[in-house]
Every structure is written in C-alpha cells, then in structure tokens.
Image (cartoon, rainbow, N blue to C red; front, side):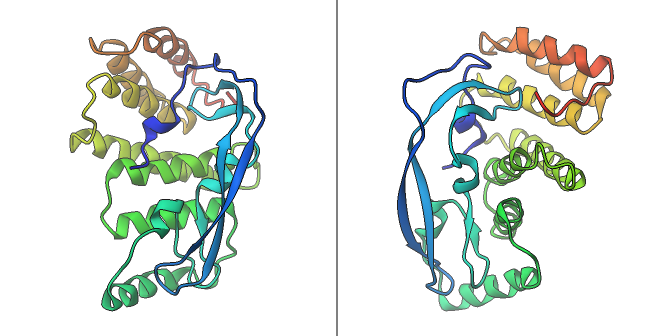
Length: 233
C-alpha cells in the first residue's frame, strides 16, 4: 500500500552515492486495456528532504512518474493501481466517473488530481488518497500560475490525513506524531496558522514521537507564529 510514510526520511540529512535510474514498465489500463508506460525508480541520490517530506537531489522525474494516466480514459494511479481487474459493470461505472475529465488538459499535476478523486470514488484509504494530493503539491511547488491548485492539493492532503487519523489507519504509534506534524505543515503552507500551531504542538507533545520531531516541529511552529506560509522549504 502506498502511504504518506513511504516518503518520510530524515529531514535535510539523507544522501547516497548514486544518481537517478529508472526502469520502463509497460502496463495496461484496467478500464480499456490501453498501454501505459511508467518509469519506475530503481535508485536515486537524495541530498536532503524538504519540510513537507519531498526528497531533494538527483531524483530525476521520480515524483512525476509515480502517478500516470491512461491516455484514452484518463484512469490514473500508481503502477500498482494498473495491476487490478474490474468487472464489466464496474468498468462502465468507472468510465462514467472518468468522463468528467474528457475535456481537461492532462499534465502531471492533473494526473494526481484524477488519481486522488478516483481513489475517493473507489473508497480507498484516506492515507492513499492524501498521498496523491501531496505528490501533486510537490509538482506545483514552483509553479506561480497554479498556486490555487497547489493550495487545494495541500488542503485535501490535510483533510484526508485528519480522516486517516480518525479512522486509525496507522498501526505504528510513532507515525501519529509524524502525521500530525505533516498536517501542521499543510496548515502553515495554506495560511491556516492557528491550526498549524495546534498540530505542531500535538506532534511535539506525543510521547511516542520520533527523535527528530521536536526540533523540526518547533522550528516550523515558529514560522506559523510569524504567519509565514513559505512553501519553498
């Protein structure tokens, strides 16, 4: 299962001796059997992690290639989402759902949007849904023409992370503080500073928190107190 925790590393400290390599994998759309290609990351050099857990370094198109779409029906998801089967009736239902995107210009961020909304429609876990929107926000970090969509992605990430906590989707007790920290980051980056402070404090006060949480959450909490919504870090 793809989860938010998949992307979490030590903030600003990871490294490797290799560059980015990927392997082309051809899959078939489970809706209309159309061919879809993924470039699946085999290795990559990471020089650090931003405060919303986006890896930095020689990572190539890692995030752009995590989620792809069928060019015909726009079924979107991870490579694992294409390794599934649906009944004929379910295929028709999904086709009907996907028809709303027929006139949309599909790019990498829109693939994340469709994947997230499709997972909502298919009633997948809140964690899986939030992950699609988080990746989408990474792709729009430096796109000044898509600020509203980036903020929408971050608000949806927050929404579904909160629901994942409410549904007890994380078995590891130490993950709870990490998720609360990330919710705080989504709040801060979208200008919801009071909520950001509250979630940072939840992370800091969690007795099961990971070692790095207190220092990082306190640092980001200071930004929230200053009403700083910097999305570049």
